Image 1 (cartoon, rainbow, N blue to C red):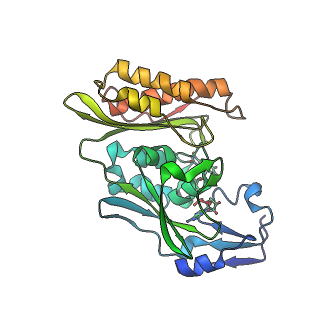
Image 2: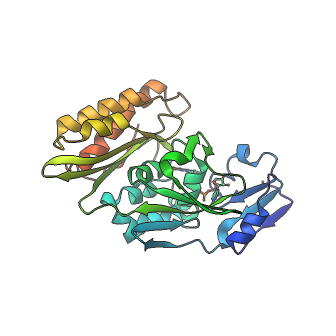
Image 3: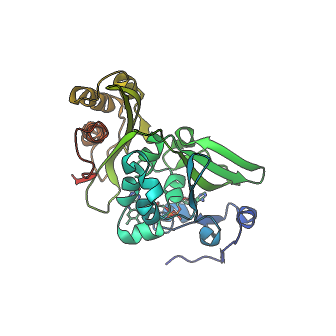
Length: 290
Ligand SMILES: Cc1cc2nc3c(=O)[nH]c(=O)nc-3n(C[C@H](O)[C@H](O)[C@H](O)COP(=O)(O)OP(=O)(O)OC[C@H]3O[C@@H](n4cnc5c(N)ncnc54)[C@H](O)[C@@H]3O)c2cc1C
């Protein structure tokens, strides 16, 4: 049972920012924070973001904006999010834990926790998402690509909160893929992958390939992206990209899988996500158990 000296429930972002202090933990859905004693060491007070007016999910100026209080369940069912590159972000959110977890967990909490195995960062990175941070000095936008610094480390100052994640609406015709391998239906990914492809006149003109849980941060596979450009979206191209994902992976061994198995799965997940985006496989099979 968690025991704290004070529980703060600010009503505005300004009030929340004024409450930030080393001995206070910021909590959104609490699904990472409250089950992990590592986060609560030395914490005497909690700042609960649940009453902030940040439950918006909207399109503004060509960006889908997902506020800090939007749950995984809301992201998974949002028509706006489903409209982005074959719904890769909806599908990442839809396999984040169990229904109970998805009803509490926020997408912003998933990003803020900066875990390399999290399910929404790969689709968000494939979609070139941004993080909007708010601090005493005002707002700051960071490309998600630059936000993750290592396991549970991100480019967020202690006096800042994430207000929302912004996802640029991709050009029409942008295709996507997402694939996750987990030990059970509601486990964190053993490995996951997301990708985006744009094909013009039979050739790939834009590619993003991201693999999760195989490096200290969700891994953008630059070599695979470069190798795909200019090629036809065929089986040979996606298999070659999968091979490059294996080469780029630097996984660790832990209770979920050995490094060797994860390296193999980097290729499996990247190839299967790319097959979906290339129209070589259906989009349904985003979760397999291994
Ligand atoms: C049983 C179980 C299964 C799970 N399965 C999965 C899974 O399959 N895939 C997956 O990706 N994750 C999974 N998770 C992890 C978790 O559900 C997600 O990471 C979740 O999205 C975190 O969101 P939250 O709102 O609960 O964050 P919290 O736990 O409230 O916070 C997480 C971290 O983010 C910080 N934070 C939250 N909001 C902000 C903000 N606005 N600004 C700055 N910092 C902030 C907190 O201070 C904390 O450090 C699972 C968790 C459990 C308990």
